[in-house]
Image (cartoon, rainbow, N blue to C red):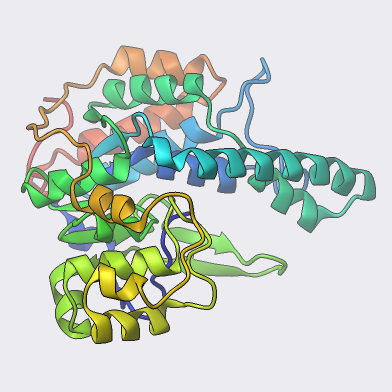
Length: 340
């Protein structure tokens, strides 16, 4: 979820090949939820499962799509969420309620045979479990992909890694990355390609987008602090509904006029229990580690073992690994060989 800056923050399209040689810190939980949402049976809405009934959509997306990034010379680093701030409690509870409600609607849609509603509610009811997270980490390490455990929000840790120059950019679907101060953000990184248009028998091409913080702030004529105030006004993960009656354009006008958080807040009716100053400070100074990220050597035997244990095709696994081997060719321009 997070803040929605669509309408005031422009994004430029890029190709995966444009990101060759770049180190990118990817918001892991954000990506895993995307995989759980989109990798599922078209008619039943069910996620991929192995013969034991265990969900495998997240592993399928993580393996094949991460391999695609690596094949294009991108050096991914996945950053996993730690403990959310205490003031996110109400948001977590509300999301659980929405998932439960979606599960109830899903059963009714199945009884009625409504394919579109089945797909919609199946996506909304999906939950990322602790076991899924741990197995995802094991898979990535076996692929030779570094894993970072954030003390709190993963996108905040990714933004700090980008600000410190450890990575070139952070990868996420959430605009919150900009509020956390990432110098550049890549959207649609792991989900680029053809996607079905909701409610239609049609497909659209989803391409990676790049959003750079400094040029955006310059174009809008505001500071990062004021961008955070805009986020608070229209709604973040910590006050999801935002201030009633205020959208992105009105929020932008307000921060240009009133400049500071105190002045802006004096003009609105704040209906949340958490003070806006606390949200502001969290975006400015999020809990995060400032550390180098060491490269990881692939464990091909473990990688194959994990995938085969969930009934993935051995032939397709081997074909993917062979493409990664070929990506080590100097002609590819890859800065490091996958097998080192």
